[in-house]
Image (tube, rainbow, N blue to C red; front, side, top):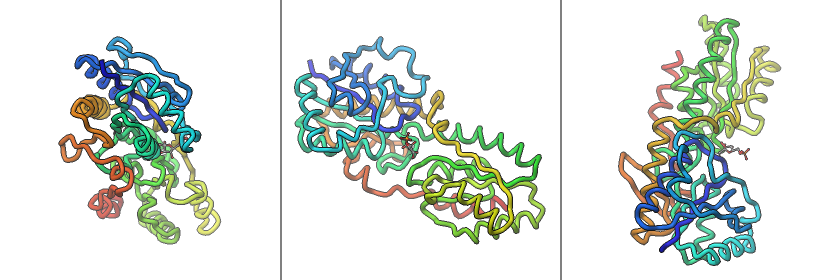
Length: 322
Ligand code: F6P
């Protein structure tokens, strides 16, 4: 019987459990033994594995986080660490490995693939949506939805006090979450790593809005916009323009919670597809969905090609906020 291991690594993302569940159940139904690797790559280093079966993943499709746990494993970044990981895979007679995570996780998978003979299939599991080879990553839709709950609530208090609010959202070096929540949340401004709006431009527009009679303004700040984040922007608005504002950093809140239907479905579809790719003998690819179709993209392309922001949405942002 072939053995297919599954791990989740890096930041958790809602919908990872749906992917694990689908992979475990599909593998079992095709006569493959699913093995869970606990705590991401750390579990490969420590030989921390568990045999899974369809019952192990009962009642998980609606749960956020990852039942396999996760970690950021610096030891795995070294050659010696990866050699240890390879030894575990060999000792446990693993034929294939499904790796669910973001850019760093899939980069680690590429390195492992250089020294281990088994098949490696990646799945895009990150709230950041910053992987090429899939229009959306597992967890992104939930993170955007969760951020919106917060923004809608802030709008009420911002409107009552006629205040400017700066809301910082996650996304690491990418502005996908920021742009989508800005549009869907009706924000006046968005600060993105990809666009680099200047401080004066932002301040002028906010002041002009106030002069036009805007009661409140919401500015979405992507965490990758600049190193000081939303706090630094607020401080400059106060010291250079005399404009008081309030700051809210949504932070890890965006990673938790029950996955949306879209993330459960994407996780399920890609988890199952990863098993089919394994059965078909494929290796070194990421399973994704582009234009409604399942696609397998080489891992090197998934981590290195730049996925563009929605330029059309970006171009209408000003008009929408006027
Ligand atoms: O990659 C997911 C993510 O949540 C990023 O948006 C964020 O920059 C980072 O992880 C935070 O990492 P940590 O959980 O290690 O603080």
